[in-house]
Image 1 (cartoon, rainbow, N blue to C red):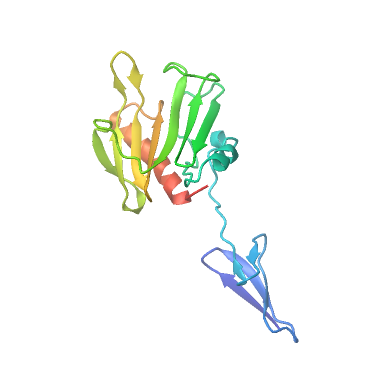
Image 2: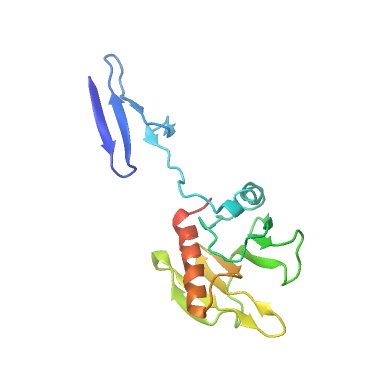
Length: 195
């Protein structure tokens, strides 16, 4: 006897084949692993990581115990030059930096960063306003600010006891666009979950 079942939640068509003599049904799902202990599909993160961050991800995963939240795309402009990505992590933190030069330590060559710190909090006067993110998460934002040099727009949020920051140049021509663009990247990172 053959029965075809559609799993609507994962948009998978799986076949359920029951053979005489078997005490349990045999489940075959196309291209998705099955947990042999409970015969359930193993969830897989199907949201891609931004291309620029894919190479550094395995290194950061080896160095930190924190959930790594990364956007599916970097929505930044003016990046037609080669981008150098570096990063490091500890048990309680990680930081990924993007720059136009390797080993960049200055503002002129820096594009921005993504960081996380377990138990971290916003610094005093680090952010100028709040904005809403997915899953009813409160975001903290500060637009581009310039004095002797310019600090890129930054967005921070707390998620499951970890404080995340994302700061990038080239995300907009106004504070409203900067906030919206950073929020889109943060939302994609939150929705994708730990990488």
